[in-house]
Length: 348
Image (cartoon, rainbow, N blue to C red; front, side):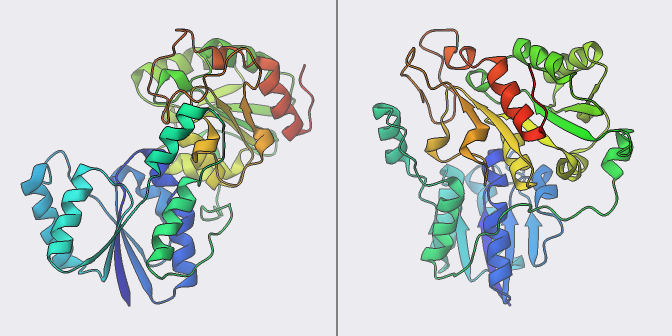
C-alpha cells in the first residue's frame, strides 16, 4: 500500500475544502493510503473514509518552534515513512517541516496559493474567476502523477439514524422545513449583521411547519444567538445541543443553509444542500466560493454605488468607508427571495 502524508492545519474552511480532493484520490487509487495531519477538532469532517488516517500535532506545545517541529518530523518519519509529502498550507511551520523531509530524501510537493493572482485581482477589481482552493489542491496531486476525479456533493456519510434531530427534539413528521442560519464569520467585514438576521427571521415565520437552526460558537456569538432564539420561538441554537460531529450529521437534513463567507458555508456545501451565502468585503471569484453551488445562491451587492470589492482576500481589512456598505446595501428582501425560491415558498 502506497502511503502519502498531507498537511493542512488551518483555517477551518480551507481544511474542509480538502474533503472532495482526498475522497477523489482514494476512490480512484485503490493502492493509496493518506495520512492527514490537521487540527484534531476537524477530524469529524473526514470520518468514515476508508484508507484516510487522521493525525494531529501539538503546535502550541511539544511541537512548537523549530525543535518541536523536528520532533514532529521524526515521529512522522518513524510511524508513517511516506513515499510522498504534500504541503497544502504553505506557511512558515510547513516550510520548516518540508525542509526536514527534503533533506532526508523525501519527495515534497507544495501548494500554489496564487498569491500574485489574488493581489492583482484586489488591485484591478475585475472579478475574473481564479482557480478555486479545491482546484489548487487537486493540481498539487495531479502534478505528482495522480489521476482522479473530484466527486460532487453530498460528501458526508449517509446518516441512517437521525440522532442530531433527536438531540434537537425535532420530529420530522411535524417539522417539514429546516432552515440553517450561520450569521457569523471570522472578520466583521464578512458579517451581514444581526439586525438583518432578525428581520429575516421575522419573514421566515411565514413558512409553515418550519424550524430555524442557528449556528455559531463562543461566548459572544452564543449570547447573540440565545437572544434571537428567545425572540423567535421557532428557532433553536445548535451549539447548546450538538457537538461539532453532530452538527455535521444534521446538515444533510437541512432544507437550506444561510451563511456568510465562512466555514459553515463550506460544510453545508459539502453536505449537498442548497447554500445561500452573503458576500461583502470578500468575493467568490478569488477561489473561496462554496462547492457546487449555483451563482444565483451567492448574494452580493452588484450596483454602482461602490467599486471597492473585494477589498481583501480574507476580509481582514477595515472598510475604507467605516460602515461595510457592501453588506449594508444587501437587503433582507434580496436574501429572503432567494431562500423562498429554494423552498418554493415566496417570502414578502
